[in-house]
Length: 120
Image 1 (cartoon, rainbow, N blue to C red):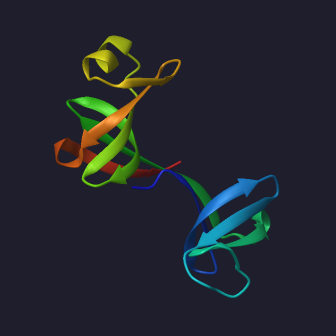
Image 2: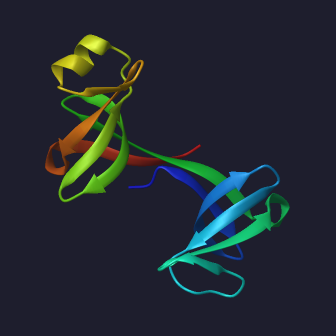
Image 3: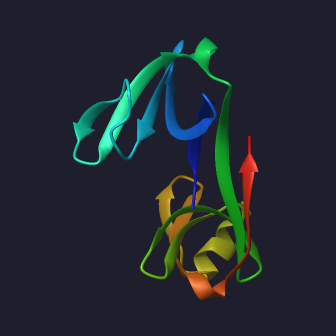
């Protein structure tokens, strides 16, 4: 499940983190120009102008007939955030208030439907 920035550079897509006029590209193995920042995590900083594309990926789904964003996956569960905007529904679903008006919880992956990636 993807929820974050991605960048296309020299024909490959990378996880990315923009910061002003530069973007950090992340890779899971050694590559030319990438520096290891921790085991299995490599980074390269480039000017935005050198990228072929920069986009935000958001994964959405439905659970119990309600709209959600998928934030993570772990052991057959999905971390989801309710986007319906109705606190009584969030409460009925047993979601926790993560912040004011933001409700999250864990949903069994086999109960989730209509999973889609959107480039924003």
